[in-house]
Image: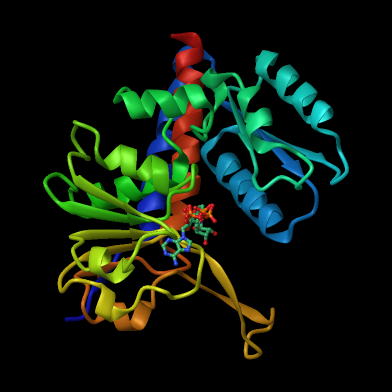
Length: 294
Ligand SMILES: NC(=O)c1ccc[n+]([C@@H]2O[C@H](COP(=O)([O-])OP(=O)(O)OC[C@H]3O[C@@H](n4cnc5c(N)ncnc54)[C@H](OP(=O)(O)O)[C@@H]3O)[C@@H](O)[C@H]2O)c1
């Protein structure tokens, strides 16, 4: 069976158009321009690309955005000071901390200082707790994007066995909580795998929907996937490639060609989950702006 390709780029564009239309109405009816502040520390090239893409997406839909670019040797106190002033600013309804931060900065401590009402990446313990309690406010953009991809391609997780590989706070863990919610678009039976899972393939092979966020190139092969499963590849890995001008290419955590032979649907890398993450950040920023006036 050749899997159909889930076009994340196309679905993300559809969502961006919806967000743009919503912002036009907000501007006209309430005089409100949603604002997003991005906190970027250091010169990690991948982070710089992500932030640039987010800026472009914000501009396209009408979100006013500013990136606060701090030097690598900035102190944690200075970062917290910036976060505290952004919390008070009326211009920014959402604050995004572009992770990873340099090792001398404690991510959790910085995130703890975010105003939960502006935490559009859903990382603050309060928002994490709301998701765990079944009353989510901001859902981390990548899990939210994965859910939207499934819903919008007719792959409702309800009643399905969803197997999530990876338990990071930004992807795997919130994904597992999201899909086990008792509500539309969720209602799945969820298995969460990690690096201590014995015989990963035993679990992945049972998935109706397999979501992989491990961060290792092409570790999920065709033998690990059930015939007809839907496969969502969150991973983004750089592989050296002398045939490319930039010297590398991007691959996911799933061996795309092989797994396409057994899956019913699969996301490509790039062009799958990545664009969805940005689209859902826009959705969360508009939600934050709306709740600031409601
Ligand atoms: N497309 C997007 O928008 C987007 C967004 C975020 C991240 N990503 C990509 O997604 C991937 C994961 O990101 P992350 O931030 O979640 O990574 P992370 O923080 O490094 O977490 C990786 C998770 O995978 C687990 N793991 C590692 N090796 C494993 C193995 N062999 N079998 C089973 N589980 C294993 C780890 O288990 P332990 O907990 O036991 O260590 C950990 O829970 C990366 O490639 C990242 O670039 C993409």
